[in-house]
Length: 258
Length: 371
Image (cartoon, rainbow over all chains, first blue to last red; front, side, top):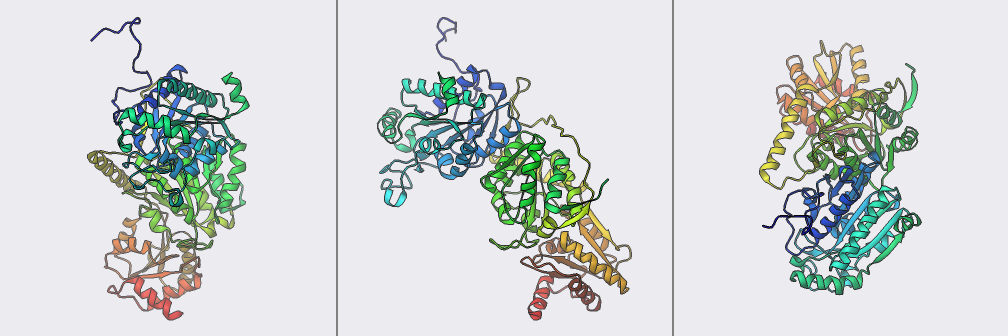
């Protein structure tokens, strides 16, 4: 094994990570999303004052991987727990990491009201169009016609309703300072996602209100696709229904963005 | 020490503030709402956290979050709201962190009504949410006691890293009585060795969770909880005794039912009947030791509740049919009058019930016969 030197070092484990290997499936973008958050917390030098809130879903064990204080919320309630933490520890940085079952289904009440109150928290929202941990059931974000274990003939919008575009929904709330959607399907988009995550945490640190980055993600295991095919699916199908973009950048946040 | 007129809900809220309450999260529900309203003004005035949550689910999970930070935090609610909170309460119990909840009980089940009731005894004293855990449950019988026990509730919750519930009912919550409020105590944010308040570069990171995927680890947690509960049972049982020294007949009642029963016991004493009252303050842990101590002198027990006999089962578990037990309950928001309980005392003295008949069955027959 070659010795790491500053000259050949191009990639290493961020300081914000523990040594634990993740439990995520091969090819899953949860690992990428985790890495981006850890890098941003390290870059901003706020690891020691950050408290994470893990959800129920595939990322239920997120707390094993980040080298920060962490709590584990009931399904969907992460924004409420984060509210409790942030209100009594206003100088700490509090973020939630939530999937689409957690945030957009059972936790819709909590996320909408946290955003409406303008809670100074950051939400990283992983949209992979299904309930991953329980084995690939239909989520509020499942695309029309998409087959899941609970929509075996494909999501029929007549009886199973339409997908929820969370970023577009939350951006109408005045408490939201920064609400954007990014995708993790290729390196260019991953770099853009990191920038957005940075800005979301900057929004919180400067007390500019609620911030959320929705990340279009894959689920090769439950989608029955290879990792590469699943990224193609994100690029072609997910982005078409859930357009990448800045949905809310308040005037205060626009100033730090510039 | 000024005596002032205070409404129960507001007294509970102010007493919590004086006990160092740093954060309150709640949702409007009758007959509890005045506590929320009072704190919406009082907490910001002191620079402390107040949020009117989007629901009781939101409120209890905000409590959960603030409790993880290691501060004194509480919510108040009433029966249907407390049902919604059971999810969060189970998680708080599983995470083994302190939190205080006041349940101003009202008639149920379902939407029920907004009249005083004690129908949530089992929910409070025997679990409530999923999983195997116990809450410490305090049952004040007056506005003064409700105010007095708020500080105790926080102390106990922190001492045992557990939930402490204070159960009152619509009458204690909404009536005004002259009381002396506890002294203002300064907020003391303790440096708990479990709190997730940011490492600040001074310690290894901490995790607070209620998930133990390995069944062996979960079993260890499930053993740690009763181990702690044994210490609670050994050290924290509290109750009030009235005229018990020479009592041959013992009335048992908590909260409002216990208070009304005291009037009946006093009236019975005037008639020369040797009756006393045991009023549990901690209904959980239940004061089984004192019930046991009374068995040799008691010809019979009369349990009075505003439900169909929930604490009755805890009394029976201790008495074990060695002495007859009689039951009297009013339901659905109806509060018994002292005269009704006096009649029950007279019945018990004149016609000692049989140990063979279940007290609930006998009471039910009397209720139905009375129409």
